Length: 255
Image (cartoon, rainbow, N blue to C red; front, top):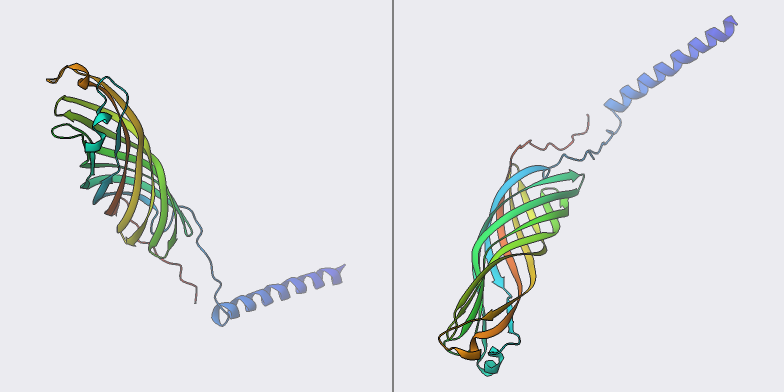
């Protein structure tokens, strides 16, 4: 029994000594053990932020006139459509989660700038639509490489429209509409600040408006229906600021 106890004690001592020696030699002479920080929530793109953007919006509002006592389609040979590019500026805020190289987030923004399109039906008849402002609430997902993030985005859009009829008959309608927005972009992290470039497609679907007007022309020419297919493309650049910035430090192996 004594021999068994002594053998066990000497065996444990030998194991402890060998382990200590191995640890000492590995820390001094052996290669460092690499560790990877995969904790979700850390990284250069993680956290809450606010920002602003400027860019160009191109309207793809297509217009057609439906049935009515004074159908404008009788002037189809005189129809000329115009699509206008306008400057837009916006503000927004969001929050990102970063897990290793993968970044997930949610972002909302509101944008201002009158995006307009109109159709001429011969002088002086014109029907025009304009988007006064629009906003989005979107999800983002992307892959980060060092301080560069490539991402896709998509979600809901909302906007406020004006439709004007001028010429022989006059009318004005304002309404709010909802739709979808999707696109992609790239973001460069510069510590507390980041720069981004983004392209969005915003589609509000189709809206029909029927008019029965007593205009100066009188008669059937002031009874007609209009239909708008409302979409636009936005290209913009932005700058963002983190609200709670913590300097991201890359892991340094032990020496």
